[in-house]
Image (cartoon, rainbow, N blue to C red):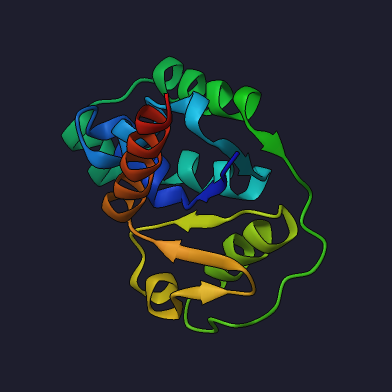
Length: 147
C-alpha cells in the first residue's frame, strides 16, 4: 500500500473546500496509508484558527477538533527524531520532510512551493494534490484492468 504524508496546507484545504482535490484524496482512505505526526496536525489546527480563515469559513471548534481527531485516529502516527535544516526560509517544512522520511512515506503531498521545488527527498516523491490524485487514478485503473 502507498504511504503518504499530507502537509498541513492539504489538511486545511480539505476541510475548507470539501469538493477540492485535497478533500478528494481524504475521501479515498482505503487506497493509501496516511502517515503523520502531531506537529503537522497542530500546524493544520493553528491555520484553521487563523482570523482570515475563521472570517471566511466560520469553522467552529467542534468541526476543527473532529476533523483533526478523525485523521489522527486513522493515521499511523510517528514521532520525528531528526529534522534536517533543508529549507531554512520555512522551518516547519523541514519537519514535514522529516516526517515523510522517517515514516517511510512514498509520497509527500503539498501545495507548498518550497517543498514542491525539491521534487524528492530521499526516496519520498513530493507532489501536488492534483498529481497524487492522478497517481491514485492510475493505480485504480491498473487494478480494474487486472480484475
